Image (cartoon, rainbow, N blue to C red; front, side, top):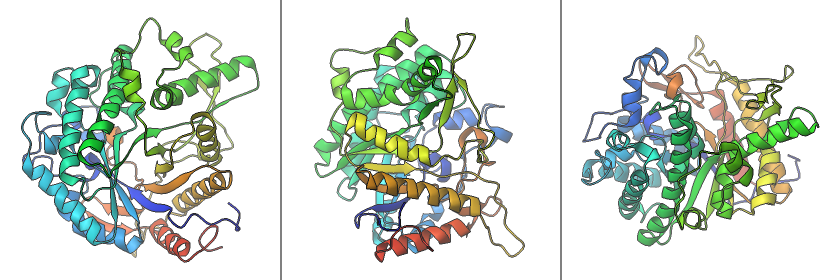
Length: 452
């Protein structure tokens, strides 16, 4: 980003979290079992058979963590509501203790000047609903709407921005297609059904939230991954388009165009999503914002044996501890493309960050220049997108805290705050201090990156 461009004065600077990854207290105050509790208890599914049973113990330590948010200077924090805390059986009986927890949490955030941006579903489906068919069943979408309505009715007087879902691609394809995530199913038919019902529940919930909390801004968070052809050959370009359809268009098209992409419907045939009359119009309910999670890109070439496109690794590129290529320009390309193809409402980058092998030094410091460089480069890409006319509303770094990283357990650290898991002590990393100074500089009318 050039030094001549500042971010808009109302641009939201935030950090992101998720309930199962930080809260812990898995068996407290009436919380029910989630699919991740069951998945973690299944030997071999998660590294070292770790779980989110304690995680960062945010459930008990949130006042101290909110003070860290305040000291960081955050405008907002992205958090998620744990469905099993509200409906331990997925539907029916409401657990008032669960609602009380989020009441206290939101009140404390607001007292510290931090706006809550809750997500209603960040992958922790109540296990009872999975036992009835999970997201492959339409009834789960119906249960989600009842849950969304109860939460929005209780908290909507203080919450201005709601996201229905986080990364339905991951919930559908890693949970039901490959089995890498909970609930651990491996069926393309189940994944296609799950993706459709996730999107359908989103559309229904948009209407429900607006009905009980009319002043709400409602959106959805999609993980998007730009796909580039390895060459200009027609075969490689087709491979990249197929990958783009799988990762991006399969979710963007129904949300913004009320249709699934024709080339992917043909690709998945004879399987097809279980679309009923009116579903696609419901999914395309007008949004107040779009959340975009961006981490990396993929470069594709055609498979000479006719199978799935092949991912090409750039030997000159740098990679994170997740083995994801660091490619900030992909974020710029993605934002311009989404603007040009879909004319979305204002966009928040709702997750962006990197895992590296962080270690506490002998004096207790955690120095992470790679993460600082990653964040700075991606924030610059957003600045260039703003210059190009993309309507950007905010940026949430992933993540505030080191936390439970799903099937990787506690082996991958994304936080700008280090968590010493044996003691649960918090240590702000050097990237935290950089981000704090950057936000302060922006508030003071600064241009470009902090420290220039």
